[in-house]
Length: 155
Image (cartoon, rainbow, N blue to C red; front, side):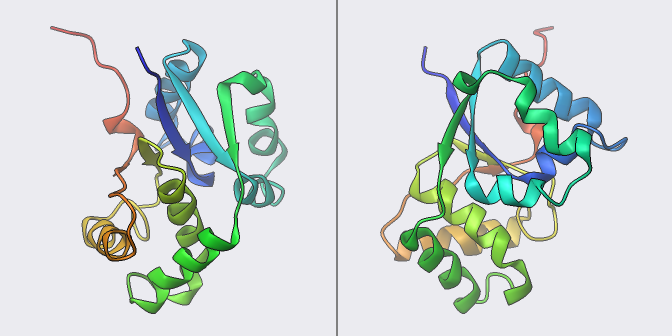
């Protein structure tokens, strides 16, 4: 069976240590450990993690490289990200979020995971991102928080 490719943003890494998000985030990472999913990570994530506390910065280093697919912020992704702002999906202050959305879109991930409810995991924003994606010739992007991506026991 094909493993889901889950693009993670910085909020997922930080959520591992956050009281509010820790439980579900650790369950998502458990799926990674169990080799059920692959995390798609970007060079932008690595740059953002440089500004994070040490334990957040070093979390992904605890896992084998084979658990990750690495993608880069290309010119195509920058242009798509800037188009989200131009189309008023979000404001200019959310440019890094837009780049995450664009990289996930261009790399055809199965889902983007985030705890950012203001700019990413937000029904209105998701509709806006996907409207731009479709208009620009890209596929729809599935955007979820980790609660939607963890496995629950069958009852």
